[in-house]
Image (cartoon, rainbow, N blue to C red; front, side, top):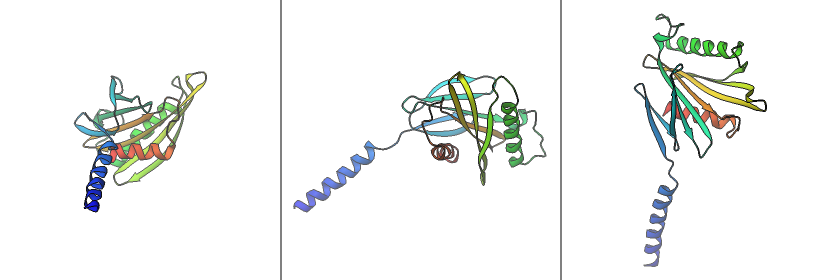
Length: 177
């Protein structure tokens, strides 16, 4: 009798523990593509020029920007390019913008390439970008889905809340959902 009560207690404990520690997900749809952001995220704004949607996670003090743009709208688009070549062009186009002198001279470095599905993760480092004492490092995942070039970026606002390995896993989790 006592063992039966212990088993019931154990089952109830496991169920409540699972619910108590389950991670929430924020689902967002941008230009027909669905993304699931781990945790609780709030929409902040849409940047008109880059068509990036900005989301904030106040608990983690992080920001995410996501854009889903029709590939043929870019100057470098050529219908003879493969999906992989389009992602390469997108990355190079963006890297060139940031490494040339457009107000903020930044360092760009590639972090990871994945062959299937193809994507590039890269980071941008800008010294004294927010003010004279704050450096920023932003990580980006670039890919191609359904005739769209995808950009997902994690903004740490100079806080360095997550190690690089965790940032890579986080971006991949959002993209590979």
